Image (cartoon, rainbow, N blue to C red; front, side, top):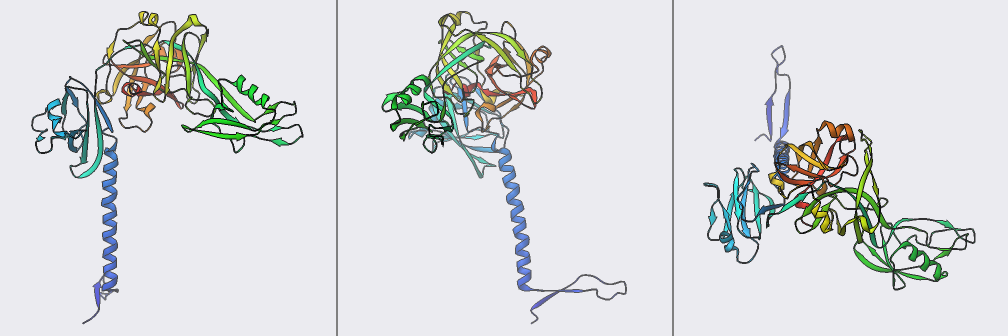
Length: 460
């Protein structure tokens, strides 16, 4: 038997055979295997493309209001089971009513309820609780586990007033490591390899450090003896030892740049009916290290806007405020500085001066593209200005960039050029509900900015 296969590939104009290709069975097998590999790679690439295209369509956490029927209208080919996160999973049906004829069915053997997001799903939860959904793409491919949190419905007072901010750090923040010339004429850096930018110095030789002046005094009093510093680094507290050196002016130094407070202006987002407030929509970070500042105490002050620098593409503008840091101008106490904003307690008289009535909040799945408004104070009083919501990112990796808005209000564009610094925290309103807060401007397009979902601000 001939161990070769022969394939006729063509004829010349003279009618003769033009060529013969000889291929061993082994070569043919490899060739077919190569083709199958290409086909498999193509199918895998297609599946992954579809998979990641749907990944952001349903958020990893969904909040729903207790006692209110709501629609989850994702319209994606994803389905799965929802169940209560506890051992008695069968109780899910007693506290959660999921109703959409022909779509949702309860599995009595497991106590779970089937959901199919190819259709609109109506959900009603009667009690505050937590559930989980195990979802699959096309009912086959594992998609993600989604937490479902039933929350108490809230009414918040949208604010939009400018605020002066003062925060004091817990300890002293190291914002840089430097060198200096010592008394012998050598260039030294005592803190090099001991401290890092972003460290908080909490204690020196067991004595709590409250401010920069105290730290400078304790270093001077050391007279060059080894010092034990208790520091906080990346949420861990540890002790390090450092030896000061004397500069040419005969002063004992560590060779560090430090900061113990921060000031600025922003916008209050909301006031709660319980005298609480939320503002900024992002945390207060140190300007040199970009690290979230470790808050010991903070205050809000009345602020008067005295100037506006218009924003242009590539150059963000800013509001200039006048702040008197005295007790008569205090309007609130800051108790938390988080990546979702600053939070605390309002002065009761501040609540009496509120310009607006409480309104409902909008959960992220309820927000739609299209017309909306923001409230901000670029003149004497808070005003509504027209914007458009152009993107809603349900699963953005940056919590402060879930919403993208575009300013369309001609008055605001004339005054500011769009979103500018100092407007962070301006509440975003759509259909009479508080949607979120402005957080950042797009540097290359001052008419556009990012926003945070209000539900994210309420999770602090």
